[in-house]
Image 1 (tube, rainbow, N blue to C red):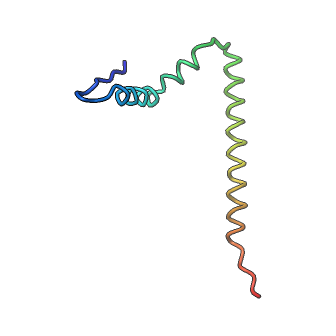
Image 2: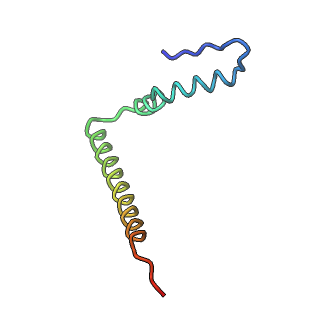
Image 3: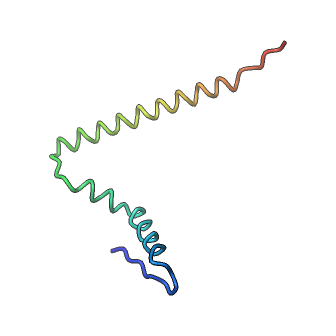
Amino acid sequence: MISVTVRENEPFEKALRRFRRKVEREGIRKDIKKNSVYLKPGERRRLKQRLAEKRRRKAARRAARRNAFSRLRSRKPRQA
């Protein structure tokens, strides 16, 4: 369980910020969201495949953009 002790002369808002950071690092919100609704095993598998495909497409777009940028930079400047 995550706990944060409020230090002496420390504003409550600062302690709350530390608590939120700890919760975020532990992935508790993500876990709660994931387990809030029951998914059948088949649905879970399809969702996993869909997300993997989405990540692959995104990586391909980034790679294409990176390659296009590197081609532009590798061109030799025109001489007048």
